[in-house]
Structure formats: structure tokens, C-alpha cells
Amino acid sequence: MIKRIAAGVAAATALAALLMAGAAQAQQKPIIAAVFANQTNQAWIATAEGVREEAAKRGYDVLLTDARDNIAKQLSDAEDAITRGAKFILLIGVDQGAAQIIRNANERKVPILNIMRSYPGDVVSYVGVDNVRVGEAMIEWWAKQLNGRAAETMVITGTPGAASSVDREKGLDKELAKHPNIKIVARQAGFYDRAKSLPVAENILQANAKAEAIIGFNDEIAMGALAAAKAQNRKLVITGTDGNKDALQAIKNGELTMSIVFDLRQAGRLAVEVADNHLKGKPAEKRIDLPINFVTKENVDKFIR
Image (cartoon, rainbow, N blue to C red; front, side, top):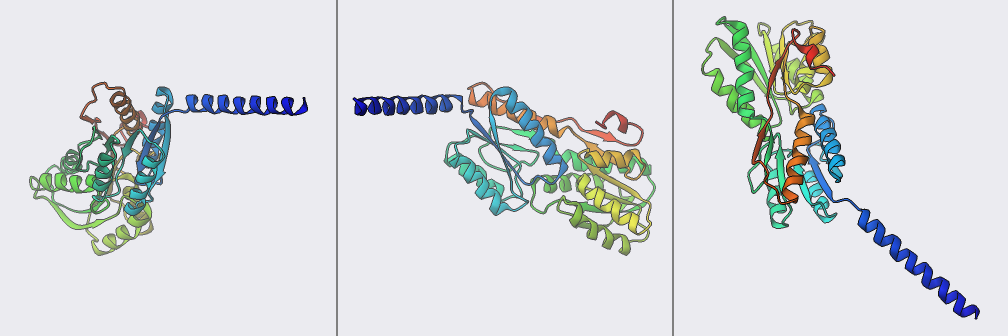
């Protein structure tokens, strides 16, 4: 009798475990992987926030990875995301090596899209800005301020090989050809990183006493350049892109001059929207370009959150 009762209890326990496992499996949400270059740049932090917000609305879990700007780690991150069952990959690639991530995803039949940095391969979409146009806009704005006057200018670019930096440099050079009054006296990489840009800015400032401006390829670079300029008691035009919170505050304070701003939180939301549509068999836009805005002290209050 006791054996029959024990057997019955064991069977009931096993059935309950199976039911619980089935319920847990039924409640498990599909995973969208956000395979990002880093999570130190405020731009990519904002993008990740947009991804999480939209994914929660649409019933997805987010697997966010931080490559720390190391392409080998990013390749491993992407492989791990696929192994863990990611249904879609949102990619902000470190550099041109990210094309291998796209090829690997294609081979594993996992759809993928580029955010802000466009790398070759079979991708569902690109969500971001036209980075060639951003490069043009950097010089267009500075040329307008100069109104034909000659000026020595310094440029700090992004990460060598990063698609956004390559494209911005193309646009910058294209526009520079129209403005011979803008003399570029220094051009060095800042790796889109504040700490790495600081010594670069220190060196080029010391070597170019007459230079009037630093054109930075993002706000992290601009803020590093600002710190260097303050240390040397130099007042000059410093511009960036992205609209980072502290950069906008620096513009309000009259320290930075201008940032080309686009809504990176919205980029994250739109990327998830595209992924969701694709996974549900709905048409997905092949390219979504964010509008760009020139933000200066005159209009910065509209952009500070």
C-alpha cells in the first residue's frame, strides 16, 4: 500500500514538473540579439535603450553584448548569440571585420541588420544615417561660419576601418574640395573614444598654435578635445556628432560649439520594428535614414532631455 502511494506521489511530482517545464517553455520569449561594438559610448547606450524599449513592447527578450571595441570578441559574441537561439541580430560592427559576422549569420540562416555602420553582406536593412552626408555636413556648417575667410582646421576621425568613420571621411573630403579656404593642418584617429582622443587633441593643439577649430567625428571625440583645449587654455571651435547628454550641456554652457544630432534611441526602436516585421513575414524597409540636426547654443534647449 505504502509503495503504491509513494509511486503515485512520484508520478504526480513528475507530471507537475513536466507541466511546469512546458509552461516555462511556452512563456519563453523569442530573443533578439543586439551585438554592439561597445556600451561605453553614450550613442550606443542610447541605441540599446531604444532596442530594449521596443523589444519589450513587441514581446521579445534582448541579448545585448558589448564587444569593447574588439572585433575578435564581437565575432565570438555573435556566435554565442546564435548558439543561444537568437532569432535576429542587430549589429553595430566594430570595424570592417564585422562583415564576417554577417556572413556567419547568413550561413546559419539568422537574419541580421546594420545600425549606424553599414557593412557588406546579405542584410535585412540598414538603420541609421547617411554617414557620407554627415561628413559633408561637418564641413558645410564650418564653411558657413567662415563665410570665405581662411582658417586652419584640425580633424579627429573615428575608428579606422569603422564604416561610419570611413564614410564620414569620404564626405568630409568631398566637401573640403569646395572650400579651399579651409586648410586641414592635422588629421588623426580618435577611435570614437574620449580617453583616446584626449592625447591626440593635446598633441595637435600643441603643434598648431594658429588652428581655429577641431572637427570631431563624434561627441566622445569632441569632449576629449574640449578637455585638451581647456588644459591648454585654448578657446576654439569644437564640433562633434550624436547629441550626447554631456556634449549638449557643454554646448549650452558655451564650451562646445556644435553637434550634428540624430535620435539614436529611435534608431534602436526602428531596428526592432524592422526585425519584428521581418520575423512575422511582413515587408521590411531596406534602409531607414534618420534626420540630422545642427545643434548649437541657439537651439540646444530643444534637444536636452
